[in-house]
Image (tube, rainbow, N blue to C red; front, side):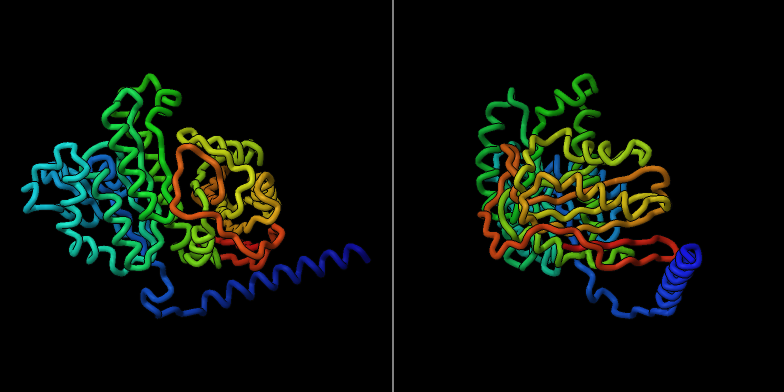
Length: 377
């Protein structure tokens, strides 16, 4: 009798999945860009441009990349969907000379052109290196313009080495302006490179930082734009970002055979960020794995990753099955309400009407090419 019952349940499951696949194959969507978040990724100055160039080479679906600079020669070497030489009348394409005030004035001069690039954006990432002229001065202006047009703005910037004393002062001043303009500012400290890759040639060491930023931005962008993802969308990200407080993006990858603890440890021990995630109150978590990734594995990863968050935390979880991830797993998380000396935010913690944290499955969807399992609190 028990065997017949199990066979009946298996048949029911297979029938349900088959019907869902059949429904999807018959669906026709002809809405153009309706319902698709518009994402812009802007690199300001030399360091920001290097990040955008690396991101452009990696390829990012559903987002446009933009490089802006006051130095025409440097701008010509960058790779992006769009390029903008700012402050033509002010600098004549010769750069900001390391003066943030010149970079700011150049951005103000070209504010109309910047606004044209960002006018239709729902989410804007601003990438820059703090301490120089163009990046330090223009990044706050770009964030300000994006916010003015209603976008959610996340800045990802790097700070100078401790030995660069004058640049540190400029970086601090630039960060003060940037954090008031952006929804959140994630700061990556170049000094951590000395701990993580101390023996690499300097160009290769900086490329590690560029790669980290590029992979994070690419992952978050594709998390909310790829059509295989259900319900883990722009509105979810906006809910997390609008909850206020300090924010951080975590990223980790490991072999599935290594187990749940290995992938969670990889994500939480972010090599270039000093973060205390205990008590965080919101999180958007996305897990990508191969065809053999199970529902239990996804649940266990999410539970372990969020176990030290606030007991009332709002956790939004999604998972995607991708054949390219055979035998490995990647987890990305955007957490707010964390503590870190390397992260700044202009918003206070304004969580209201908290609801105890739960992680429950809402829908299960399997795509003929790329399957998706989605969860929400």
